[in-house]
Length: 377
Ligand code: MG
Image (cartoon, rainbow, N blue to C red):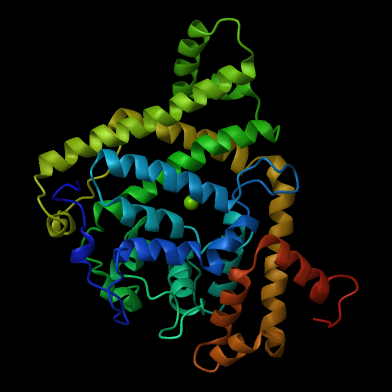
């Protein structure tokens, strides 16, 4: 039974192109299903989360990360009596705007766009993807998702100022997003920060000792685990500890958000929107523990020398492909050439490159910019 502050499917502001109601799936269940059946969703399998697939089949990719986010989000949504269908749709769609090669890809595309006085933002690209680049349905372009799912794509991780983003005016930028959307930013970070510790060790970029010695929450929980399982292999102690880190973050997020929601006295989805602050948050103590994990990952994984080679290669491939299609737009697929008649070329090239998977962009790069390229730049 959803709480009064949950967003009900019947209250949805609807779709761009009105559709008849489905016999037994509500609007958010249908949105979830459309996302799962989209091409952008399937491409996540071949997009880097942090570690490239070349090192091991066991690392998270952006698809398995997305599934982890959906699982954690549903658990929390059920406990807080939020709308689980909306939460699931938002979790599954949250990363479809990511370009190849994770954050390195995002940075290079943004830099390339800035040369044209524009920018690249993965949330806004996700919105373009679901609105314009999925061609599956006879009656409308894109996935024709509900307002709330599109709003969540835009607003889950940051606030946008209507002054700088006039094209987003319809998304109630002066209001908070529903709790279901607020949740996704937190579950995203819970999922990736615990997973990156795990994959970092698996990739041998981190040692288990290093995690234990430098992440205070991990150290404390590890001491408890060691006491409980004294004669157990370190690998299993590490896993048991990591599981407890995840549990600690999730449980605190539930308890603290419940407290904030109670104190705010919000009794409807509209009251959540009008409340001056977001109401999903960690307690100050756990927020500090979360920050310490993030800081550790930045210093020892994301900016580690071991990751530099992959990053530099990613930057080169994306920058060269962007420059290539700017110079030879006639080699873009026909549908993109068509679009470049109504939007600036750099935007269309950016859309095309951002939509590529890691393996596809490598193939294209070899074909067009490699030593035996077919067409010179
Ligand atoms: Mg994510």
